[in-house]
Image 1: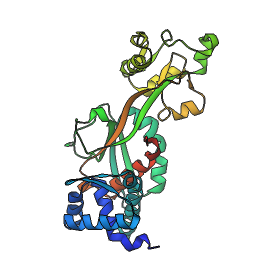
Image 2: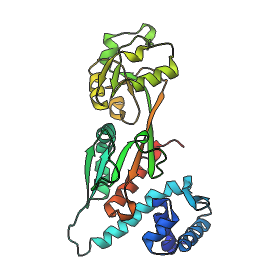
Image 3: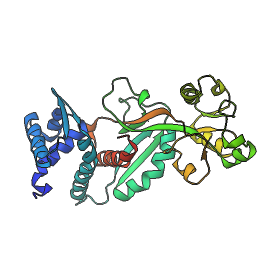
Image 4: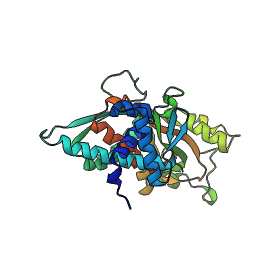
Length: 298
């Protein structure tokens, strides 16, 4: 079998085209023509015997196969760049500046950063939490991670990471203080814990128990972390999920009460001005897309 190293130029063209989802931008970055990028990608697809891009006129989008290998290819290219940049540069460190929605920042990203740092020890990550995603014009920011509804409508530069599908959950203490006949809770009458308004619980009730207005009641906290703390103290039932609340559910701090779920939101990442991104930014994107790959629905 022909080794992948025989297609390094094609791999490089694919990596840039996949990162931008644009042959034109890839050509601009690599300082070649659009035709050269297209030819390299076609050669790679013939070798792999699978399409990596869907083509619609001048627009291209990654196929599932392309999306699957893209983070690994970017990671490999970053590792090559990093190896050469480290020669003669001492311990120069690059930083990627990330602004993320508070729950994502504290309950998912922070808990997974050790893996990023272990894989890329020469890169630093500056993480800030924000309720509102900053505008692209704000200087010094490389990546914004937030609910996809917070990005401008039609923003094709935002890449979806994973959805939040929530279900009712509560602490064992709550179960002891509020025993349910037959073990089934009447969601129309249980005390609720809300995070950042009542809209999420409202969506669950409208989907599953439309005749109840119980979503209007309960204690409201400013963010999910505070709401989780309140729920674990036994204050009421919270809408939890398997991703952000993974630790609490795995350790039994929270227990699922009802299998019915509602989709609360999608998290998306916006990589600002990728044409100027450094190796640290490319490494973070590669790592993030790979780390969340199994969390995205097929």
